[in-house]
Image (cartoon, rainbow, N blue to C red):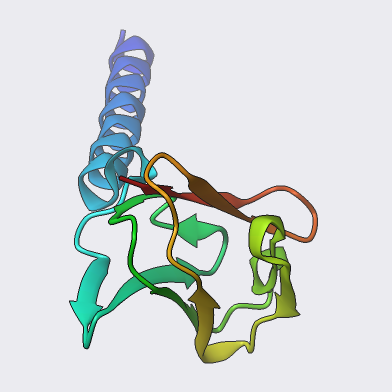
Length: 130
């Protein structure tokens, strides 16, 4: 009887632990969508994207019709997300392990999208212009 009780308690503990991890992950970055990663400074739109173990946020909504700068931030990034390609603007480069990389993007039309992808095709991000 004591064995069954400890087995049940172990199962309950594991379920609570998994649920906690799931809830914490969704609160921290729900659906991978962007929050306040877009700002306008001196007539240029700046979109900040973090590259480490993927890209965050994965989806960003930005304004169309104004010049844009994508600011890629790395902090100890040694995975494939540091090998970035943005085919629609002809960008392909290795990001530094730590620091910022500024990528100029011409003004985009409403409804257009820019997608960044890592060298292995595992990670990506999308910028939707409205």
